Amino acid sequence: MVTATDGLGHFSAERPAVRVRGLWATVAGTRHATLAAGLPVALEEVGDETPPLGRVPAFIYLVVEGAEAAADDACACESGAPRLPDAEDLVRQSAAYSQDIGPIA
Image 1 (tube, helix red, strand yellow):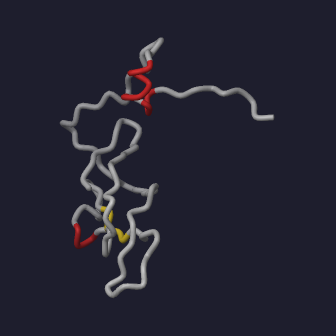
Image 2 (cartoon, rainbow, N blue to C red; image 1 turned 180 degrees about the vertical axis):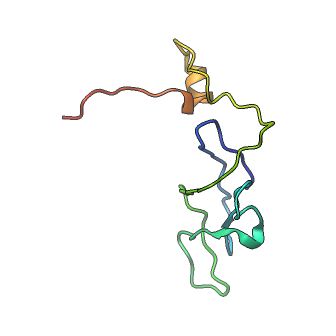
C-alpha cells in the first residue's frame, strides 16, 4: 500500500484481503523514509504456518517526530472548511468536517 496524508496528517487505503508475511511503515521526510529503516507493523490473526502469515490491521497509528514538509508542496491546511457541505462533500472530505453530537448522557 502506498498513500499520502491529507492536510491533517490522516491517511487511508484499502487493506489487502490476502494474508501477508510482514508489513513495514515508511514515512517520507523522516529517518524512516526507506524500507530498510521502516517500522515493523504487527499483523492481526497470525496463523500457525511457516513462515507465519497475518492480516493487515484495520487501524495503524503512526507517530512521527521531526518530519519536514517539502517547501514546494501545495497545502490547503491553512484554509477554513467551506460552509453548508452537502452529503458528497462530507464523504469525500471527511477530515475537513466534524459533527457535534452533543453531550453524552
